[in-house]
Image (tube, rainbow, N blue to C red; front, side):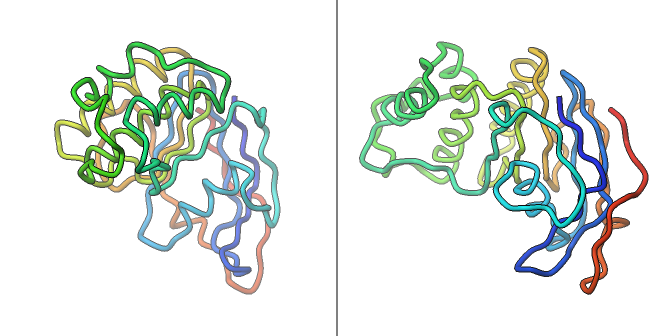
Length: 205
């Protein structure tokens, strides 16, 4: 479902990673590791098609991809239910009944987005992933602002509802989500800031 071959990426015109290759089949996840600033976000954005690669290829159907960043995309003047309905309409879908339980939003349905706490806002932002129906999720620190219980709830949704249904996920995170997923340390792929070339070892998952 997702094949990344010899990818080289840049941030602000400066190469940060090169030679990144991996392949994910249905139901598989990959956890990206590495120190802050190494290029995890840049790699995810490039895979998602939000910025061009310096070298290499990404093979995936564009309509299957979804990138979720630190920003939650919540409209403050809409209720929780209206926010999810908005995103469902954008993607030509309806809000699945299981989203409310999966992200613990039942009691917040009628709350205005602008009145939510940071953790509640994050849960609502992540709930969009259960609405849009994209099969390849590119997640950038998805558990920011979540407490331990909410982290477990999200990890459960990801494993059971998304991966269990044949979806794929690439996750940049510093915490353990308890997923049965391999990790890719990006440190060996750090690019020379003056050059960027493709090609390196591959991880087939």
